[in-house]
Amino acid sequence: MVGLHKSEMKNPVVRWIDERLPIPSMLNQEYAKFPTPKNFNYFWNFGALAMVNLVIMIVTGIFLAMHYTPHTSYAFDSVERIMRDVNFGWLIRYIHMNGASMFFIVVFIHIFRGLYYGSYKAPRELLWILGVVILLLMMATAFMGYVLPWGQMSFWGATVITNLFSAFPIVGESIVVWLWGGFSVDNPTLNRFFSLHYLLPFLIVGVVFLHVVALHITGSNNPLGIEPKGPQDTIPFHPYYTIKDTFGLCIYLIVFAFLVFFMPNYLGHADNYIPANPLVTPAHIVPEWYFLPFYAILRAVPDKLGGVLLMFGSILVLFVLPWLDTSPVRSMKFRPLARPFFWMFAIICVVLGYAGAMPAEGIWVTVSQVGTAYYFMYFLVILPVLGKIEKPRPLPESISAPVLRGGGPIMAGAAAKPMEKA
Image (cartoon, rainbow, N blue to C red):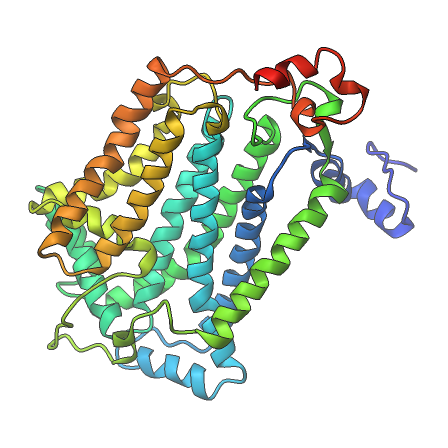
């Protein structure tokens, strides 16, 4: 007797399961047959790489949690025991530690790709907002994870960053006490950070699921920034993009393995191999590299509250970006005036990261201030104004026209004309 769902699966075992729980059909529809623009470049690999990285972080984190002790007297020693005594503990820890950096590298490239090709514009506003939520959850998870080894930089980084909330009037001090679980960074702080660091990745998985659902509802953007006009503009996700993503994954794993086996501590800080000591302040307290641009923005303003508001504002402004960019054209490929401003923005972000790693004195204060000013000007002034005054290049009629440039009779008719303009 056949149920309500008629399975098309060939394998009898898979078909039996599918008729009762149609997950195979759903995966086949959403990942194998799913129509995708035929002109994706390799920047579209990074979304899949981010999902793979998330799985790596969760799996290695679960194994590390089996041996970690969230107590100020034992945390540092438990991490050293993982490195020295647990079978392949050193490998699991180095993968997890460097996986955080690889995760942010992949996500930052994914975000800048979205900025360049206008993937935040209608109808993908909610897709973009969910992506920013994922970024915020990643930052919170990474910060709490950096505290767990309970080295010098862990302790003092936690002290400095959590103290920032005290800048808020009236409720600031109460928030800090709540975060600490007392009146200083101590054992209750470490316990709650460990609990949240373990929990938040699963919350990230939930938001990633919503992110993917939103993507499959609105469809993917593409380098041209135009919607597919029909079947001639799309191809099935499998096998074309599964093969392309697999190639990208191989390159990513090679880079990841090189970092783990040859430069495992390159992106870390030497002071975190010193046990936490509340009585000895490090000469220069810095967060992990992926927080440095925001750290530079924080220090660009001498007023504590102003710096905190700017730092949080640098992320919150991304939530309203779909409404700040007033240009009707998505892709920077057709916006000659906006393109140099975008590349200047990308350079400024790198410069802010470098300035954040330097002491807050001399020329680096000025560099941080100039970089912060341009960062906010790009979103609040440049993009809204350019959308009004810029004259974009004409868009091609369809995705197929530039993809099939110069080939076959399809270019002999109407499809050839828009390409001459484009």
